[in-house]
Length: 464
Image 1 (tube, rainbow, N blue to C red):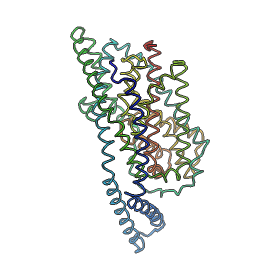
Image 2 (spheres, one colour):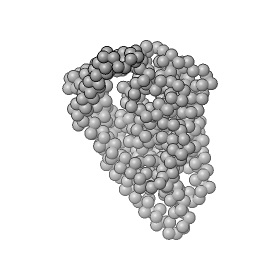
Image 3 (tube, rainbow, N blue to C red):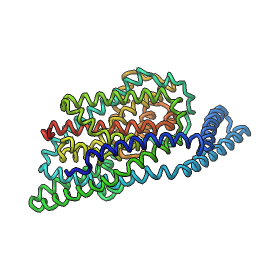
Image 4 (tube, rainbow, N blue to C red):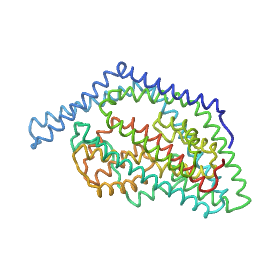
């Protein structure tokens, strides 16, 4: 694969992203305390009043009384005022949000054709379904082992730290609507998520797993038709190089996107939320660091000292995923860096896209951490057997909804309902979820990178 950027340019881009990150936080803080301060105050006071009114309404048994009707009217007025303040704040910060949104749209424009072309070429060069099955089996073995380890680590840490008990947060009313629709695991929904009815629809929606399935069939069929297939392979290979060249152009906008994303997040949330949730955020990020250490050590068992080189290689895509809260934004750059590290492009093209549906290690750890945190907050004790059952449920349900916006919260909502934990507890996390998503996204990049390098090593396809 052709080298797109020189090492000096790459170093400058990383530096620019860091500068943009710091500048975005600084400007966001200034805007939070000035430009959108009135809207933030209105939203915060409305949320506090609405929570109190919900408790008061729940205490009134007769819904026909004047007191109940008056409270309901006042609550509706507050909900309207909050919605107006949110809309006004979003409007004021829209220029900054647009910077990040445009970059992410450009990345999504690239991802589907990049996955399709590179995977078709990789599978066609492998030659047969036997090789695909062998690599697929090794890949899924690593993915499920890493997922279980991530979930288990989250469970151990939340039981050790007990943030739900230590933080003494005011609890939302159990009947509160969080706006997160829970999902239930059904074989039908899972299969629909895996197998596409239309590859064009899958590409339009960036359903990576469905694109992978179609690409596998297309690649094997291309190899099966022999000499005629060589024309397709050459065309796809050239097309993938064009997409990677486009990636190089798009990546030049990464610092601008990071600046816009961080400015908008901090302007909306403020740094005050870090104080309120400092225990939870601190313990969760400590957990992510421990997970990074475990993943890197596990990779080191197979890669040896080269795992250090791998970590250095992926620092830029990891930083990009952290800054934009999107592991998808880092996908093209991660693919390129893994090939530069020495991974065979056929393995990278196969393992990395699959990892975006089956190996989201940061998200997995968050699921057990958040679910048990909410249970602790409501004083609900779950014994070891129940917690292990929750872990296994999360292991399965998380595989069926990859690609859904706020996927982690959707899975958690369904899990809470399964174990009779108030779903309203998700309201405790909605405000800080964007800050937590940054760490989850970065961890997903690290986990998928280690997995790809290890599978390349297993296949004897890792160049020294």
